[in-house]
Image 1: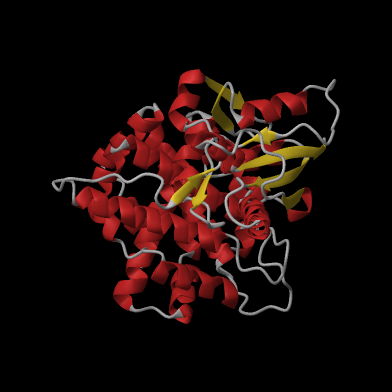
Image 2: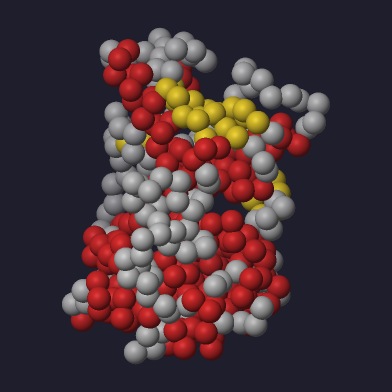
Length: 403
């Protein structure tokens, strides 16, 4: 079975045209980028699934994350919606960061150079290709009833095809010589050169990101299939904002672009946490202190929970990229309003700060560089007498502890 061939079939001229339009690149260059990205991503998945535990985690994700291939039936419809496409690309990029770690920036640059598209476009394209590939793989797993051994056998059988399709010069990013070699259950805790494990007891960091992307695809697919039905949008019933500036307001303030040393291009508002943090880091006249905090503007959690709303992860992903580009350490502070018992608020704020740390670690950041702490309803920045004030006090902030 030729997995690469099956995935390539999804990228029809119409699909490539939609992706090129989204990226603002020519169709020819976009197709060239896809040709290079596909074997690179599949190679990364193969290497992460080259152990018994790795392939077991991958199979679990496929079965529970909605990777049954159903969204492939309406791929064109998904890509017609710019917001859905952007969200999908961002989630895919987070997943890829967990696979390639600090090599992801180099991979984006490589794809950019070989296909003549911008580095930012290459990063977005990689994020779009990853979940599409996973749905093709998942469809085969579901329809053929593959077990862990069957999935491992399928992936490792792609060795020759993937090696032949990989563009020249990618050896510095992928371990080509080890590609397709299944090591079973080795004594070593190191899975491969890309895997950044900060705690041997933690599950694979890319598992929740795969699950998250799968759930998103399933939700979008369902929405698209029901477009002829009146839709009721309910806000703030399942999520709590931890910032007082909504995303629309941030866009109005202004949009800045910053190309990091890793080759990743970030887009953010003038009054965003990204702009404030980068400005502080690059200003040598500003020393590290214990009073300078930077608030997330658009980070939300499920109400009364430490579970991050999957649609509000962009700032977290951008912070991860900043951490990869600058040798800084961060304190992550969680805060609540004064509603309820303080002991509960204290725990909730600590759990939410820890959730942000876990998300950053899942994106390839060393946990030793991050220090979460919950402050409960201490240190309010506004009055708790109004709903607006309470919303401002429910926040996540970061402080640079080393630069």
